[in-house]
Length: 68
Image 1: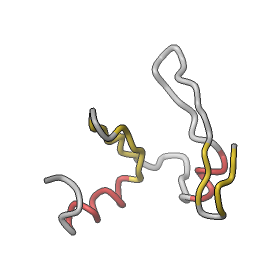
Image 2: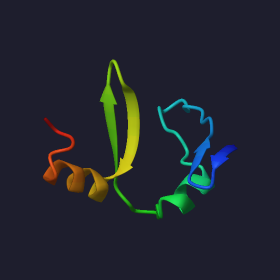
Image 3: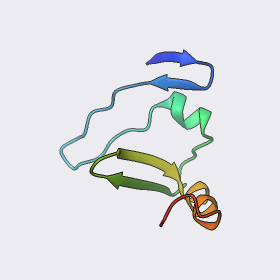
Image 4: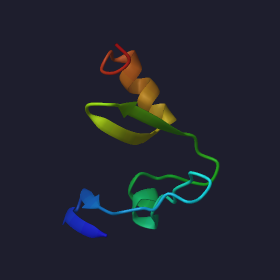
């Protein structure tokens, strides 16, 4: 893991044989991700992919920021 600042980091993860990834401990702690939480996997061919907690996605949808 490489810290960019106290609020950002870059880390690589490998995709396993079943297509699974492990969310690094630092990311789980920073974003308060606990076992049983639901994460949303968002994708756009041009912009890439993002992984977010589902409650954050729904908040952005209500504000009209995503989902257009």
